[in-house]
Length: 337
Image (cartoon, rainbow, N blue to C red; front, side, top):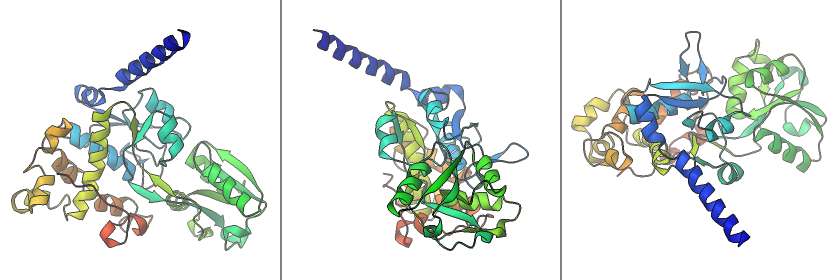
């Protein structure tokens, strides 16, 4: 009997939790504002300028969801979160979604009550050192002091890599990216390790960027993407397909400059994405112009990449793995039909 009661209580508890988490789409509509968790500041991904305006690839995902649901990409309240804070903030309902350079892993997917809604940047962990150190390879870092951003996948990857190669290191951890950069710049560590995208972002923030070198080794797979709570499939679908729409728009040759023209003259696929044909918006529980609003107000994935981290940005990162699938990359969108 005790076992049956315990099982029943567990089922009831799960039901209450799922019920509490459900309805985010309606909440956002009623509130008229999306609450989106972002980083405390990372160039190219989520960074606030002196006027208080946020920009970056992760910010663009927030904007895309707001455009899809509310018809206005600017209706976003950004919540800066450290790596340690991010999952608790999402689990507790403090934010509606997380778009904060977060790696999709089994542990996070299966044990935190969260769902990853896709990948908006394929990354990998690397190392940055001072030129004065004279190091050409990560395999020369035995005995090094390493600056690490706490609460990230970086820590385990680093431990695995050094152990596999018979090397030792001293970890010096920090809570934010800015603190990690300051530790590296002040000489508290010999090397800074993070996702390569973050290394490039951190390097341009140094007083003398040319004095720092990113080593060639990439020691992990880091698929970064937006995250939502489990138990709310309607919201999960909206976030997932908002990101997909940006990727699909680039594949179909759509962008913010030609969206209005293609509404009238585009191919069947282009017009379907832009809401001229089909009922995708109805299926998602949002307006029929949801994807048009994303493309027109935020742009395609390619536009977002180039202006934030690519050729149109100070980071100058090549497309690489983040190119479209038909151009040698991994960006492949499911059909929107």
